[in-house]
Length: 370
Image (cartoon, rainbow, N blue to C red; front, side, top):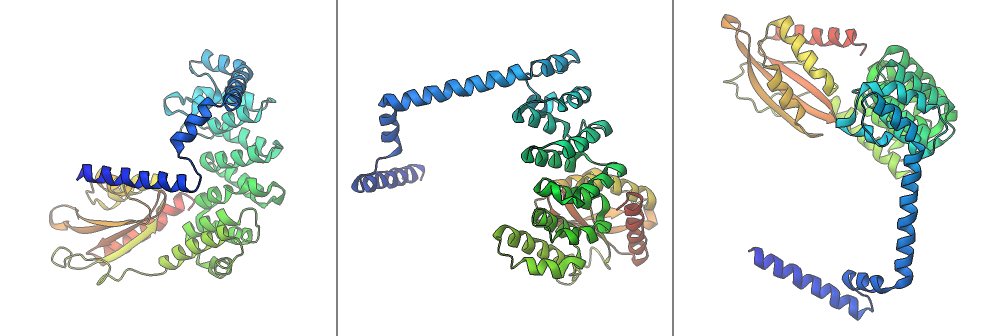
């Protein structure tokens, strides 16, 4: 079978080469042979290689002091970009990067510093403040966009989120703000919807604002989003249609007789408690849920089950909860609405327990400012 496939592949390639010859074309191998014998072409390739090597050496020379300071504190790198490697990430590098962020480096070097300050695992309040300050002072639009992207990853404290809101309202920053709607929506949840709806009128941030509203399942924005599904820009149309799909899907309640093929012998009754989450919050929620209601859940198993799901995937599992006379069943259903954004649907046999868990979800969300 393998030989047959290889023979068919070779036959197809031979036919393609014959067709090229008939049209006066040459194949890739023949072209490379000709270029390797073309002195002018080879000279050009060598010149380009020398130029690339010189650019690389110049970048290393430019970062010499930065690298020296990083190595002094035990961070063994040859450039700021090396800090993006997982094995090189270290919080002791942050103060040095903050200092060098203010220096007049080339675009390439500065971008490496900005991206290294935008690593969530090592970021701190000081690095976020440095990025916020740089966002406002930076004149290069591409670098400002990179800063905005880094901020959308590392901002977590309330005072910094409030600064993000201020930047979102400043139209002079144009497309550099494009990643900020995600940050705002992530922290303010439904409270972010009014401003995000206003931003739909801003062409420089409308695409990512649509994504943020879709994640929030903002029914309030539905009418404006429907208009944007007919926008002249195909990119915006696509984002609008995707957001609208998520909003409309969120309005459809589970039909327990059709959408959840759970044997009634396993669960006699099913009462729902549900909410959307960021993946990073699921473990904390399940642990607190476990303690509050003494469910005896295997949190690690449920978390692993959630983490390995693809976007738009939907899966469920039935687990035992409680102990002794209080023992019953719970259906744990997950719909991965977006990257790292699962919707959790918990179905209980007890209507009272489902109501209590629903109230607990709201309470838990409130404590996290959601």
